[in-house]
Image (cartoon, rainbow, N blue to C red; front, side, top):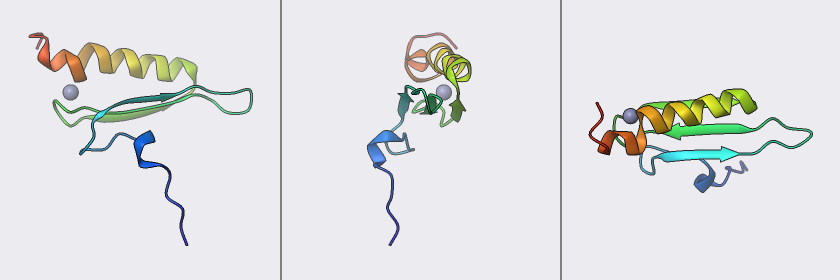
Length: 70
Ligand SMILES: [Zn+2]
C-alpha cells in the first residue's frame, strides 16, 4: 500500500499556486509552484533556490499575469 503525500502540500494543474516549506536543521527548505496563468511549474530546494523561485513566481507568474504586466 502506497501512502500519498497530502495533496494540499503540492500545487497541481487543478490547484495552481505557490507552496513553500521551511527547512529545519536537518532538511533544506522546499518550494514548488504551478502557475494558473500559463501552466509553468518549477521546484526548488534550499533557502537560496527557494527564494529565487518565489521571486520568479511573484514577478512573472501567478498574480503577475493579472497585473497588466506582460
Ligand atoms: Zn505563468
